[in-house]
Length: 352
Image (tube, rainbow, N blue to C red; front, side, top):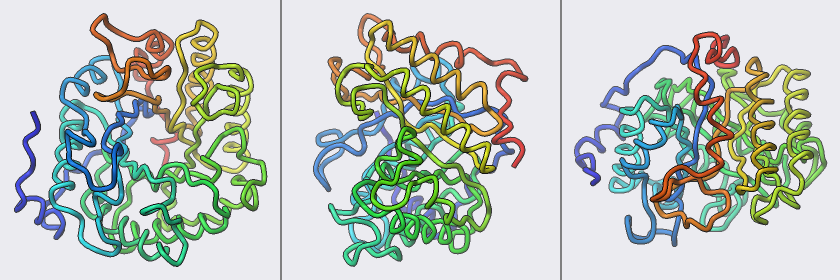
């Protein structure tokens, strides 16, 4: 059962009058899970009817397995029904309550407006959704968790079908608003365009390659990581239910690792997932091992997907069934069980 925060408390938070907890910088890389559901359904919609926030049962399960991070997708339009307007108090109460439930289980939250660089179907950086509106949204949201080291700001999910230069301008505007208007120093995760695939990071798509154009990204606090996603199927989309290109996918993450090191950047593997074939499990282990071996540049990973409303037939889903854990979990357990001080230390987070 969810007990919403009172509207008075939410209003105080919006006004910046409720201090958020402050934590020392974490020493563990993100080893996380995307708990999907709050981005479901039609714009607007009714909670627990059209869309759902993570349940305590689901959060308990993943915390108990050793996950230390939840990437939390939600809809920008629900949280801010009108561009440049106030955040919706009811929806904000659901988000804030969920963040506190995650925190109470010793996990961090990555806030993920799961919008593909769009608002009501219109591209960020267009006349309909100017960069100022994207910046305004992030200024309002960032104020609620400014300098809370347990909350990470993922700018937006998977920009696509847009010029990369347009996206870089929008990302710069959001980063400036987070730092200068919200006075927040939280880690920012910055995706590329073309669904931010690791495999296409250096391929010119919709303009320059992400790995070139994002050289123009500017964070006044220099506390950011570039977020990539990488799936294993025929076209790397994660929609085909196979892992025919597992070897290529692992090589793509290794190539992105090399790019991070060559350019002095940090990375985050925000989405990756597999069906249950044994060959897929081997590929998943190999991809996680690339990230875990290179903690000097990787801030961590969050597997896609879990959530209370995901169908048991979804191939990538690791929401537990009545009979127990799903097979994919076995490929993640070596990293989840790595609790030693040396093994869990994350230089990419510690040394900044």
